[in-house]
Image (tube, rainbow over all chains, first blue to last red; front, side, top):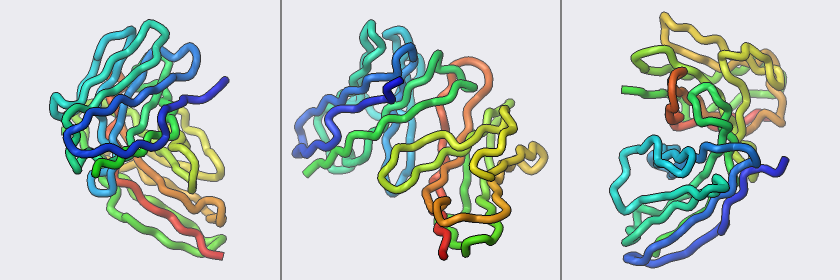
Length: 114
Length: 110
């Protein structure tokens, strides 16, 4: 099975712009979660989608949003970018998204905000 | 509040020496505990989870509910074990997010 893929792998944006990141889960996986990884805060949960519905949300401002399509592919959007949004954004997929499911991570998208 | 603490940011051992990466957690309920590993230039991947009680690549981890700990151990470290290790937890019921510790960078010297 192909692993989780994320596009693009690298992005450079300027403050105030918006960005969309894409994640394709492992075939058959219906849950997609997004995490932000920074040197200071480590890995922090953004949100989780299952069957096109946001099921869980972390403590991030409303500028961070996402969606999931019927084929389970997911996108996350960050509007009005700030310097502090520079991070590695990881996507993870699992079968059903239960706490006992194994999550499989993508390679990440490295976002740099100038 | 859910919290995972990995007290050591860096850990350096020599090849063949025992290694223990510490993890303590705070969770009101029954957690599922995981260890994830990230080797250089590779993606984050699951190493082991307490519910399966497996030994992966010689690593084991025991859940100690009394001490709320889930330390990762290996009796004889190898150079290829050098990586970033993250302890994580989630709830066992319902859809729960993964809460990660800040990670420990393990370096195994020759």
